[in-house]
Amino acid sequence: MNKDELKNNTDKNALEKEELNTQTTENNNVDQENEEKNSESENKEVEKLTPEEELETLKDKLARTFAEMENQRRRFEKERDDAYEYGGYSFAKEALNLLDNLERSKAALESDEKLKDSDALRKIVEHLDIINNDMLSIFKKNNIEPIRSINEKLDPNLHQAMMEIEDDTKEPGTIVQEIQKGFMMKDRLLRPSLVGVSKKIVKEEKKQEPKKDHKDEKNQ
Image (cartoon, rainbow, N blue to C red):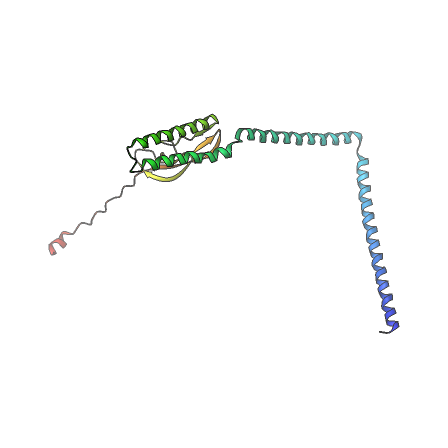
């Protein structure tokens, strides 16, 4: 490349750079003009408001602020009351496992052939019953009580049906077996009762054999 070509390229690049700077400056000027117009428009709107209108605007903003503060206060009070009323909800739910284990232990001991009808078994069962009753008493003092199930109508909000048991002596849907006891904490469900409900006995009709034709009997 000779000196003339190099000079021409340099001049060309300089010219393009100058044009780019000019375009950028023009864009910045346009943006600034738009901002100034918007600012002037807002100022005009503010200037248009009369003192009475400004007062009404301030009253509206103040009313909205007070309403938001009141909503926050109510939310805080509700959360505080819930924490006070149901603060031990999770602990109580976990503690129910102790009652379940006591009942399982009692059932396992009573079904042990070696311990059946023994004095040792009777003493152990008595102690387990005492612990079970003490726990139920403590629960009751804290507004935790068992859900009624046996002979009650199935309530999906309180009971969970695990099986159906044929029983014509009970109305269909009546709870006839309690698999796991459910509990309430005040008006809140800790866990539902797992139950078995009654259903009508299905009677199988005997199939009648087709009568033989007398003519066929004679032929035989």
